[in-house]
Image 1 (tube, one colour):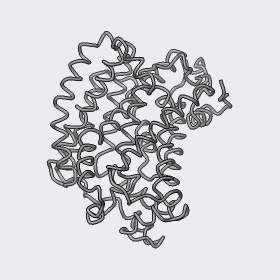
Image 2 (cartoon, rainbow, N blue to C red):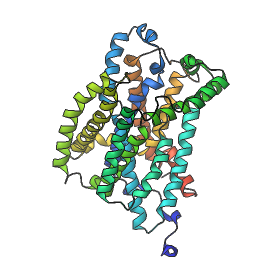
Image 3 (tube, rainbow, N blue to C red):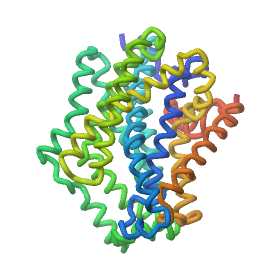
Image 4 (tube, rainbow, N blue to C red):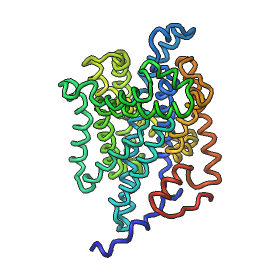
Amino acid sequence: MESEIVPVTTLTPTSGQERFEFLDVLRGCALFGIITANMVSYSLYLYLPESAKVSMNTYSADRVFDFLELVLIEGKFYTIFSVLFGVGFSILLTRAQAKELVFHRFFLRRLFVLYLIGVAHAILFWHNDILQYYALLGALLLPFVKAGNRTILAFAAVSLVVPAAITLAGAIPAESFTAPRDFLYDRFGFASDERVDISAGGNFAQIVRLNLGNWFGQLDYVITSGWFFKIFGCFLLGFYLGRNEIHKNLQSYRPIIKRLAIIGIAAGLPLNVIYAYAFSSESWLHTLSDTVAILPLSAGYASLLCLIWIGPSGNKLLRHFAPVGRMALTNYVGQSVICTLIFYGTGLGLGGKIGPTLYLPVGFAVYLFQVMASRLWLRRFRFGPLEWLWRMLTYGSWIPLAK
């Protein structure tokens, strides 16, 4: 009976003993791919005209590194990150059910706090935030709590295929939700071709206004590209994997994981060469390759990491990535804070001045710093700073931070 259910507030934060270290390792590795992919936007290289790119001394090497990033990185690690969100949902649900707790209200409050963090991240630092969309789509997992495995997999498959079907059918106009962005650009006196100059040379107030306008541009992208469906499909895949406790029994699934690693990488690499080749076009080839290329290689990467983890000494090698994964929220937002200080007018203002040959090593250095900083932080504290804030606002009570 409902009256016998324990209040949601008794669902306490996950302790170190309750965590699954390999999931933290995967999150940590995914954050490396995410910062690598995001550097093209952080550095403002993405928004430069071709003439500005050609004028750089590193242009020939930049083209090679840009192509390799598209083949090996672009989209793959956001996919892994999204699947892990679904796994995390299943773990939270399992804990709540074991303690006979009201889950829906707790989870919605958790998502609401995540949404607020995402909006603050998007407006104050970097408009391409993904957290707010995770929060909105995460709520759609709740109707699947009692669904069967086949139903979950069927909806996941449909969600992953729908974007290509909609785009190829022309059901969503290429520019559907840009009117608010254009209105704000006009209201703030910005021109679209001034985006790089304002970001790289503007003050904090100007950048916040620009981010506010670009926030609507990002909303346009996630809708018109079908990204909403892709993310939700990955959430469902993660929920399926988590509810079947694959992460608890990796050794038992070793033969399947090995086949998935081989097939995913062998099929994913050539498909992603096509994806990279068609990336800048608006052709049917880009739409189709986006659908069929990214998921196999993402699965191949994740499976390969699984095999290394369950190998004779793999956990010693990969365990270094667990702390950065335990602080995934802090480090995801932290990447934006650090990189905007490097490339935006609020810091060094290097945006638009370097290409992939130089900005990729900067991204690697930022990630390496986060690996070391996360390890040092977690020696003294139970959670990352944003994880701590997220938990306290979710549970509505004070949670000790220091160990």
